[in-house]
Image (cartoon, rainbow, N blue to C red; front, side, top):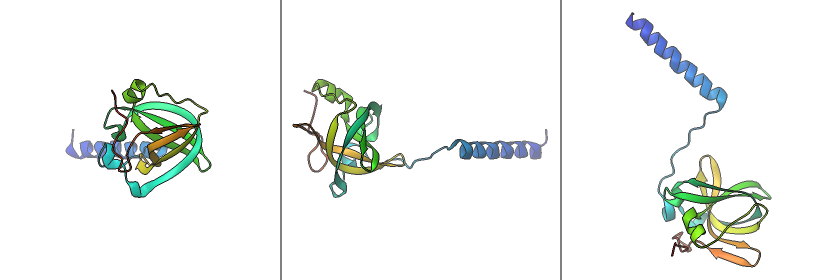
Length: 144
């Protein structure tokens, strides 16, 4: 086999892969720099009101690489993902969120995987207020 045909074959494979990624919609995200409280910027703090549509758990940098609890909240501006705390902490505190919960969230905006998300500092649900972090973003709610 000639070296030139090997080179052309490799070039063709890279071109096909690039076209497939464009067609399928492959997304590349810049990694989030930091973890936990380091991601919380008080200057980006906002208040969001809405209805919980979905509760999910997955690992992310806000939860310091652990399994974290996240809410998909339908707001007047659209859907927003809310990063809470490590799932084990909510379970130990017997805190559970459900679809349909009306919530008001105070937190800092964070650009994560191509979207503007929110790191929750506190959440009000009915007449219950849960405080997860202090004003600097340091975790207050911990496992006993």
